[in-house]
Length: 508
Image (cartoon, rainbow, N blue to C red; front, side, top):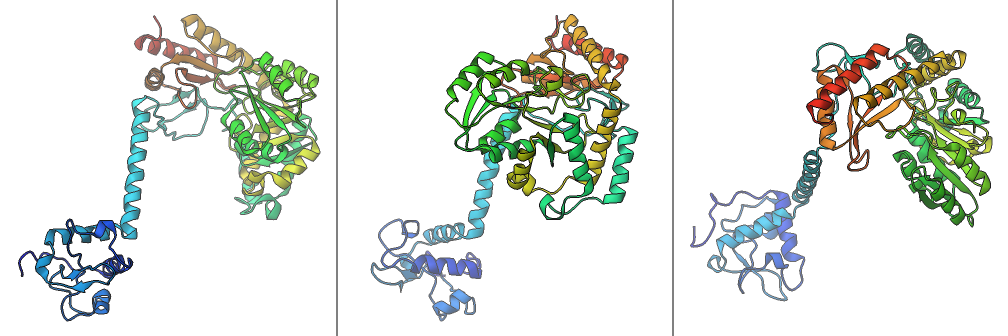
């Protein structure tokens, strides 16, 4: 081994990709090596071509590996030429080899993945540090007022499900799903317009339109998809959409997809809505978009005033009824029935995944031509598989039960009032008015999370909500009342809140 050289023991064999990378790196430049390949001082660069092997032998790996790596000099304007080994530093040879190998495609991909992991871990640590980390508790039973939770002994009272009518595990609903599964299969393996429309889909759409007293209806995999499909298909750059600032994320995202002019009015502020309607008069169509019931705050849109303004300024009204369908209004038709404006609301989007069986699915119902247009242009409808038959069967049965007997709807108001009044008497602030969504306002995200954990220890399943689900500084525990909760269940929940609230200083 010569002075300053690298012998065989110190220089591991190079595999074919590395040989090719070095060769290309050296010979791709016509006159000078790239900056990362230049020696630390004026002098030779190198390529291990010394010995009896030719370049092609060395690159292919068929010839003997060079005994010494530092054997080639770079001359400006020429290809590499052979020089003595003493002219090149062994340490510099190692650094150049490392640089070449680090630029190999596999190494670059690994580096990019490592960078991504670092960015993601930093973001996740920020969520943990802010106290807004959302853990998923695992339920090991059917959905219902009483459930079993992994790691917790005994039955737990569930006060945070959208199971407003308690139909998620109703025996008749389950049986309908099983029967439809047997008769129509597990799924369609297709979108609707190819070979994914069964008679049960058309029957359910007709039933939904009849329930809401509208001309037609169209099914989607979820109401999020219904909101994603509506605005883009309906509105053009000539139109305008006016949206409540606290509308559900799916409405916001759906509006973002369309090319209409966008106006956002302050939450439930009718003066601001009127000002925006005046500003939007120059546009072809004006569509006011609002939640019927706002899921985070439990308040209800002033539809009477919204419809009055829409009439004055020649606008259409769209209402998302996900947290109203099935239980608000005398027969559970929703906020338009509750507030007496059924004939003034143009378009309704809602869900089958809450009160109406709780499985999945969403829909749009309204004018026939609108529904026909959505079948042609709504991307979530055109490019998503059909709603599974079992889900269709469950939802259809839930609607039948509701239309046959709405006494279950009447019990909701009394149970909601019982919880709200007792919690307020205990000293808690409860957002919203007369809605089974009862947000217990706490403000601090960590407090909401810790109180929810301690409620579980007392046999009550509730969840803390914090940013980005709700605005910063407005964390809360959202309690939801179900028709199948008993008065004793509600009283037990209130007692647990009082105990935990005092423990954490939320109550005096």
